[in-house]
Length: 195
Image (cartoon, rainbow, N blue to C red; front, side, top):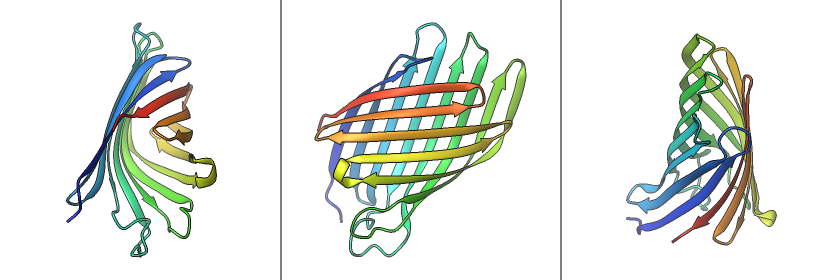
């Protein structure tokens, strides 16, 4: 049986174009079945633009140990909603994503594979349907830097995301670019792990 370890992180999250004010909370717990995390974030401009993001993730408890024999690293269930009221743009998606890779002396790159369902509305056009996601994720331990890039195909649009994050003890920062059709947003974040 695993010992129970917890951590709570809070972060300020700002979209430079559409949603400049936001925050996220992330709760990590190592429980009976391994490490799980919950995250919830909200951003707004107080004039009709909103973003909501939620995630539940599970990490393979053997990953990163000498007992690790499988390529499975983690699985995440992600929900995302973007609503730009003045522009008449709405997008929501549910994605189940898996991370696959090998742990050698240092964490190597991971392949990200996902499938989900999305709905996009713009200018009186509604496009719901399934989609798929492909990406890469890699850590650079000496720089304490983590890089992720994904591309997803949703009905009527491609979604491109890139993120770079860096940790400084209990502080962490991130820069994220999200592009979906004509929608573009650059997010900056500053987070702190409370315990």
